[in-house]
Image 1 (cartoon, rainbow, N blue to C red):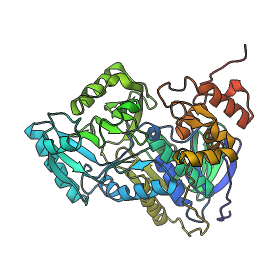
Image 2 (spheres, rainbow, N blue to C red):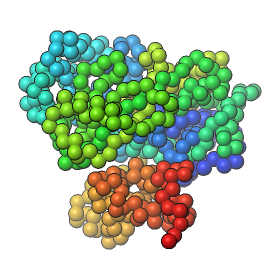
Image 3 (cartoon, rainbow, N blue to C red):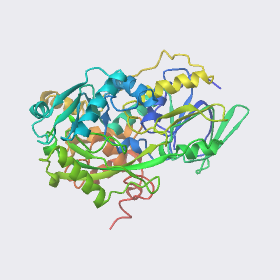
Image 4 (tube, one colour):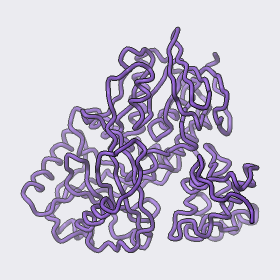
Length: 496
């Protein structure tokens, strides 16, 4: 088995594969993707296994996209440690990967009750104990001076200047893409159904008939991580799936607030927030409820009503007639309320990275580094690879050019002069980049997550046929095989 990485492009759809790797990672969400990237710094063969047709299809595409300041986790927990370490690591990594990330700060608001104001002071003290710098408590009047749309009922606010916003699915795509550029292999449509360990080697098989082997196995399977654990013979934890619903508003609502606005948290979570997004929209949500099943991502009228009502409590001026889409995501929690990052019980060579709910996105780089330290303790040898390149080309470089620069670039690359998505001003050239960069887009939603084509007010009403034609042409497939999001989500059945 060679420890010398081979740089390669593209990915394997995991058909009839039998290979040996140093590390297998199950789950291509933000944590699995970030771990793969951090491992690609070393002379290791790494394979990332994902049951879906793309990366970032679980909680990593449906969350608040918040860089949490670190005031909330219980002191002494892994959440507190990795949140505090993860904030600056997130900003640094997002910059290296050219992922949209803004340090906009957050407000945690009390609404005039003695209990809520006491909670604000307790959160401030907890933040100091967690080592978070720059926290302060300000009056409601001072908060409204800085955020004029804030409710008149806000009486006391915890000001968290290190907090921020990031695009979670772009972060995941970029982390996996950078890992692949540095030699990591991604195997999609690889639904693990069996794990065996013999003579120090894990043999993983999939429902599709694949066989993949590795010396170490890392369980980053999100809501399904307890199922992966049980396959290997460890039943030491059970994931509790929690659903959260959101409403996304058009960009003409995006400047209602500049900070991320929280309400005092409860035992159910950090509560309903109102936040700008890195793309200029306004996001409200999430509520919190136990999910009936692990892939229940349906929104409900009752849930969205709660989101709207409580968001308006913080910012009464929000115009909910400007909602352009709603969605829901599943968070994986555990009864003890902390991250699970430890070797598996009685399964040598297996590491669990599970129950990564909030602030998991913020802590994702720190989680990856912590997991690598645990792998070293378990016997993984890490020798730095001098060819590692942690920087990723900016996929949005064209839209950041001046008009003069765009004119000059279009003369050399005319595909950038053809606008496919009018709402978000996405060119054909940008879509072609998304189709051919690691990890390449294979379906309409994959293009959407990488370029924002279809994310505007019309939600793909105009650009969809053109995106389908580009996918057909570039992948050399029939139009009838193009899907929205893999599996059987086909748009057309044939020609008329």
